[in-house]
Image 1 (cartoon, rainbow over the protein chains, first blue to last red):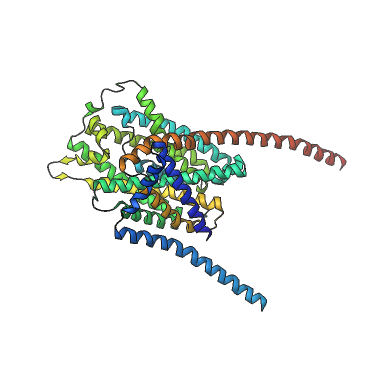
Image 2 (cartoon, rainbow over the protein chains, first blue to last red):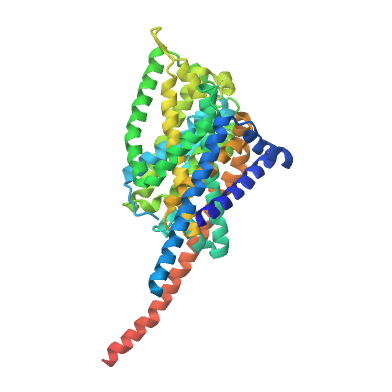
Length: 82
Length: 385
């Protein structure tokens, strides 16, 4: 979960970074936001499928390790209580 | 930090491949017209100075990465913010290199393939390499460096044999004086590609012989600078200044003009191989530094676990970074150099070095002051005995 949090934080800051560069280039905020979003609006089906597959893959790994850790903690607690 | 060690020779190869990576791909120093090679050489001299600054910082803190020693120099709060900015900067540059690669393939070869797919393939490859660690990366670079050298020599041989080099295109030297060359150096070539060696500050702690860092780094920058300057001089002498100014990928245009005995032509594959290998290593180094930096900053034990999410962030950023190639290049050569490269490659490292120097001097003087009372104490004790 920490990994997902870190990556979301980094992504948000990177997007702000990129928008700032666009603004420094001479675009206004609305245009730079539109420029950033537009490539995702014109994606083909294959691109969309791959994109979501990558996002799912990113989320699945950390969530699985998180639940595994939780399970292990519960098991160790049970053993201690016994 | 992972427990890995790399040799001085491997660092040399990595720096050379890194420097040549996207510098061979995009048109650099074209504002200097036929003196572009001179701008590269002066940029190389500036690159030496910048490298000495980064090496100076490394010599004060040889066992820790910059994300950690920045905190020691600037204090915890300010240092963490600065380290975070540096990590963002590395990721951003990685995304820029990825975009360069994707745009090159789309413009020149894969007209129908979407940018997203090409970038995804490259990012997956880079993620896989980084998950395997720095040692795998440097061993791969050792293998592919030989291939690059062979390709370079054969391309040079074919260009010379086909008789397309016209030295007169490089003349007159310094037509408008030295001013445009110096301006191009300080607005472009100093930072891209030479100033970007700041990324190797993240890799220095892995070296098995720290004493060789300085000499090897300077040698690598000198070698890559000479190669780059000669490539640009060949480009100008083959294409001429007007064509260079219009060409999005000058080296590709040069290779496309090769024609030996009427049958050896269309050697675009040379260009693809050279640039794909170069871009791969450049991206890998940037990405590795950003993964290690993030792990160090957020105290993540297994840095490899960060590689996939950060790779995805780089992929998305490479798409959103600019709406088209010309915007991307303009942003890279004019905005980024002024607002990102200049402060983060030149000003902040120089200030850090100054502060580190003063701090270490103070420490030394304190230590020498503390030594005397101890000595007295010891002498008194010895007398008593």
